[in-house]
Length: 412
Image 1 (cartoon, rainbow, N blue to C red):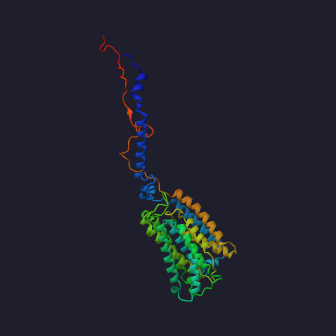
Image 2: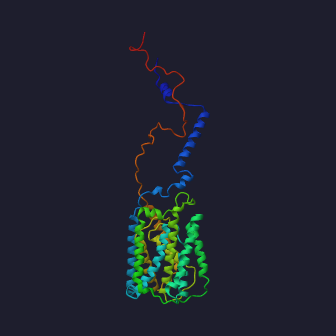
Image 3: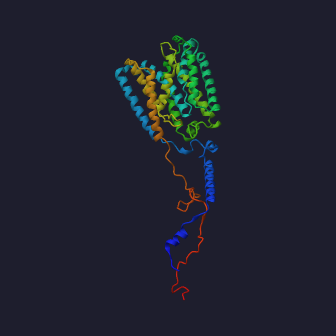
C-alpha cells in the first residue's frame, strides 16, 4: 500500500468537529463555567467583589521615595520664602513677631492636619473652614468668660456634629465630600447670622505659648505621618479609598476610621478658629470660611497626601504649612492684596499635580507571587473557549498502512 503523507496528516492531525447542535451546547456551557469562575475570583459584578479587600491589588508597602523627594522640594521652598522674609524684615524672626508667626502657623497647621487625616480616611471634611470661623465668632462673643467656658460649647457641638455626619456617611454610604459639604453649608448659615464684625472680648493671648503650640502641631504632623507609613495602619485608615464599585458598602470595619477622622478634624478646626481669634486684634468678620477649607485641603494635597486617600508622606504637612505661613506674613508686610480664595485655588491646583505624582510613583512595586502548580501547562494543546469541546480523535476511514510490501513484509 502506498504511503500518502498529506492524506495521512489530514486524517490523523486535523480533528473533525461533532454536529453543530453539540458544538453550540458545549460553547454555551463553557461560557457559563467561565462566568462562574470569574464570580468566584471576584472579577464579576457579584457579592464576591464586595467581599474582596479593596486594597487586594496593591499588597505591599507604598514606595516613600516620591514623598521624601517632594518633601525636600517643600523644605527648600519654605527656606527660600523665609530668606526673602528675613531680608525684608529681620524683626519678623524675633520676638514678638516670631510669636505671632508661630501662632498663625499652629492654627493653619491644625486645619491642615484635619484635612490630611480625613483625606487619608477617604472622607475629606469640607466643613473645616466654616467650623473654624464659627469657633472664632464663638470666642469673640463669649471670650469675656474663661477660655474653657467659652470653647466647651463649640467643642461639644463640633464633636456631636462630626459623629452624626459619620453615621450618615456609614448608613447611607454616600461620599464623604458630599456629606461634609452639606454640613459646611449649614455652618455657613450659622456664621452669616451675624451682620457685622464681632470684636474679640477675651483676654487669652496664645502668643505666650507660641513655641509650645507650634511644637505640638509639628509633633502631631510628624508622628501622624510616620504612623501612616505602617502598612496595617495605612490600610485600616484608608478603607474608604475608592476601589471597584465605590457605591458598594464596606461594612462596619470602616466605622472607626470614618467617625474618628471626622471627629478629630472638627476638634482641630475649633482649636484653629480659637487661635485665629485670640491672636488677632481685629474684629472677627462673618463670612463663609470656605477659603480656609480650600487652604487646608490644598496644603494637605501639597504635602503629599493623595486625593484618593490612604497615601501620604511624613514631613510634608510641616514643611507645607511653614512655607505658606511665611508667605502670608511676607505678603502682608509687602502689602500684597491677595485674596485668600486666590491663594487657596493656587495651593489646591498644585496639590492636584502632587496627587498625580504620588499615585503614579508611590504605589507598591508588583510582587512576584509563588508559582501556581495547579495551573495548566501553557502549550498549544490547551482548550480554548472558541473551539469545540468534543472532537473525533479518529477517522471514520481506515488508516492506510504506513509501510507497503517490502523485503520485511509478508510479500509474496
